Length: 443
Image 1 (cartoon, rainbow, N blue to C red):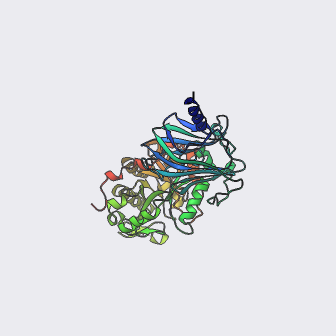
Image 2: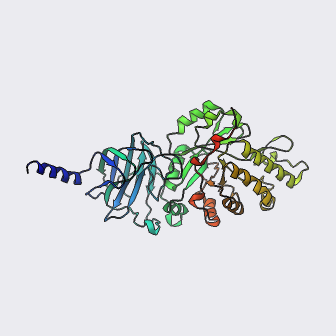
Image 3: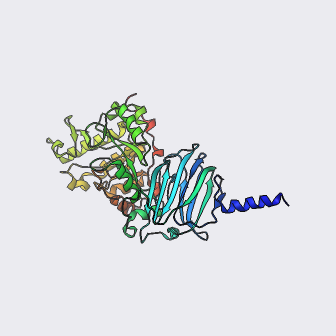
């Protein structure tokens, strides 16, 4: 009896106190007996390959509450470490399987903050009137229990602490007003786990990486921040391999997807395959072409657009020829600013982009598994072209190609989703890239 009593006391303590270590496998977990309001959870986690665990909070009587995911791996469309599930889903993890990483989850009033490796990845302030689908109607900030649940594989937790916070404490990352979710299309996509990613964001104009970071967390849009590589572009330009590696060191720890835009028509010969290979995705467009008289022509500049007697139809034939050549010869994962026309031709967009010309472009996209960007800045391609691409099984990305910090919230893409029946299965991710199999550039 003397030996049994200490064991019983230890078991009782484990039910009430927060364990400093947890070993989570599928179906295993721990739930606090205490109810928490404002609090911070800190610790370190280590995931085996493909393992997943969930930190839940604001739970009462088995309610769903909120959940933060621990799940690393490639950018393949699955939700990643730090995701505030169904509210701020993330698609790139700052942590790696097999390595210990710091995590923090904090609730301060109506704000939920998540840090991975010391970097803010979620800063969500629940508005006064949050929008929730029927399936997730219980996602509301309220006092509740905290739990750790194993979902798949093995996840280890160490140095776990739960610290109550004083009411009224603030998250320093909470710098922007909360979204009006009753009139916000992004939260509706997040609630059904539709990938919300803008792959085509440039740090230019007044947009700094700090501002982009804050906007991404507040708006609920994952940003792919990309410089230009080559010549002739506007904004951050990379000129050679050394600048590529320096940029990588500068940005790789930021909570963005990591891409690059090929600029001009010499970029594949300027950069080595190894240097370009560090980017998670590459994209280019046909806004710089070699015109029918051999001149370099940036077709977004009216002074560089010349018909020289060939007329609009002849110009369009040459533009389609150039587009097909670019997408065939250059290792693009994404065709950006697709079907863009010079200002003088845009009023006749529907007439000039004939079915035959569209098919020529879609053929090369299909052949090389290149995604078609839906571009909210230029409102292209047309819904008709998007529908035809979807019928062929071509994947899509969303990309704004901003000039400053005022670039909206993917409004045209949201319209395309509804009008063209785009589903989560139609969205492209870097894990689908085949560019490493294609010959190009410096051999």
